[in-house]
Every structure is written in C-alpha cells, then in structure tokens.
Length: 203
Image (cartoon, rainbow, N blue to C red; front, side, top):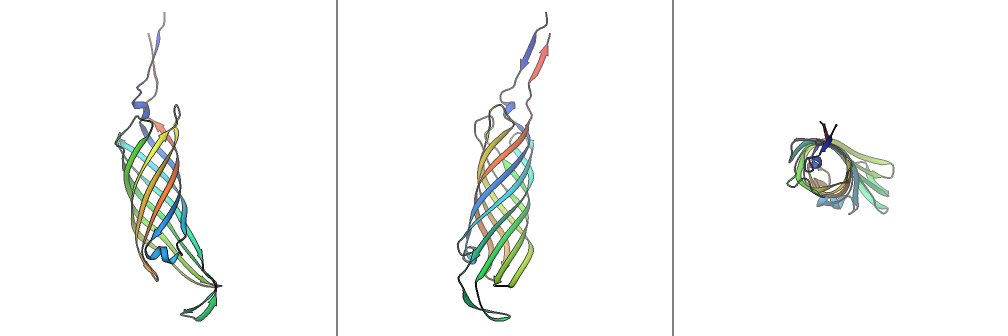
C-alpha cells in the first residue's frame, strides 16, 4: 500500500522570496512647493521590487513618477523677457530612482505591516509657462523617503493588496521652490513568489 502525506508549513507559506508591487498614490506638497503648485494635489505611480534576504527584511529598488499641474488666472508677470500678460501654467514632476529597505515585524498574519524607506536620485522637472513662453529646469537631485504600510495577501494565492504612507524630501532649489517636500498616500497590488511549498511524501 502506498501512503501519500502532504506536509504544509503554515507559517512558511506566508513568507515571500520576492515581491513585485504596482503602486498608485496621491500626495500633498508642503512649504514653498505647495505655494508653487497653488495647493493642488500630486498623483503618480510606482513600480517596486523587493527581495527578502531574511524573513523580516527586504532590499530592493523603486522607480516611479509623480506629477502636478496648476493653472493660474490671467495676470501680468515680470520676466527676464519683459512684462507678459498671460495665463500662467505650472508643472512639477519627479521621477524617483531609489533603493529601498524594509522591516516586517509580523509575518504569517492576515496583514503584514512594514516600515522602512528609500534613498536615491530624483529626476526633477520644473516648468513655468506664460502662454507660449516657457521657463524650464531639469536636474538630478538626491532624496529620501521614509515609508510605513501593510500588505494583505489574498488567501491561497500569490497576489495581494496593500496601502502605504510615504514622506518625500528632495534636496532641490530653483526659483520659488526651496526643497521639495510632499506626502503620499497610496494603494498597492502585489505579486510574490512564496518560499513555502507543499511537500508530498509517499511510502
């Protein structure tokens, strides 16, 4: 007689080797950046890859894009090219290319909280238009972004959802903007490959 026994490590099944996350976020600027964009809200998306080198720690990278646009009423403005009467349109976008590290204090639960952050370069794109007259500035600046959030795996699958809060600080100064600071709240969809697999033993 052949007897097959399925061995499942319940706790291990909640562990991941790698995670791929797609994030959507909306954000609020702070300080001079908030004034520049006329108190409008940011939105953006990010792709995030995390590798677990230990059960509770991951390292990875993130690349994304955040953008905001503000349109001011027609006014007369003094510029380097003279006085211009026009509708002013302002754009500010950031493209972070950063490394990240996270700590996961609780594993094997319905919700997996985490805390950590990212460090790297932000590609900054400043634009200010007076009608068809444009003033632009693009630069690469260092930045840091602490982050907290949670992941909620969908039962018996390798996908799930999550939510996060992120604080971004970029060392950036141009015209009206003195340092770039904005807060993000976002939602995630993630895909992961789990370490724990069912083992079948036959005797």
